[in-house]
Length: 192
Image (cartoon, rainbow, N blue to C red; front, side, top):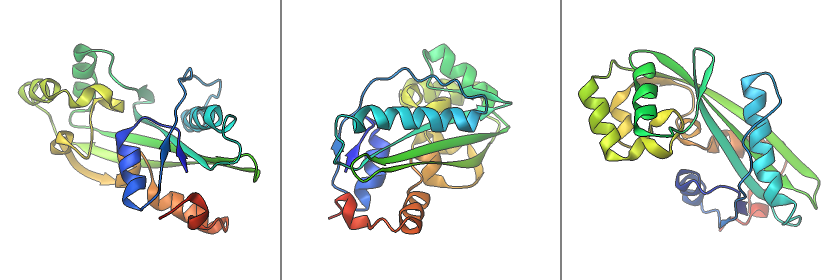
């Protein structure tokens, strides 16, 4: 199976289940003309995976896109430390949505699936000192919403409603259920 993502978190989640992965990603412009946020994320996930699938039509290609949404606004990856600080302050003491869309494509078998999983994350009130410490760790700089729930950012989380792995970047349970519902054997995805 090909993972159309450079995300170490997605690779880790899939590899833990024994999937043998090739990493092949394409840089695409992550924009969508869809109106609804969920549809935008699904569209971007589809575009990321399709860009790799067209060059590998016989292979199963999987990928995902994750965003943090607060007050109807998408928080992507921070562009600077100041941007990370602004994002973390906006999340402090509030709940926000994490939307992860995933796509599985095999062009030869005419398989094209895109689904999404939404979760709610509740943050504690974060002090300026905690934000400064966290930014200095470097962790927030490559993560949507400027935090990683599986790393140091976990100290900000009061609770979650939803799928931990979707928040981390790939909803593995939902993905496996989708495969089962569509009668796609896990073994056909090159499982060890």
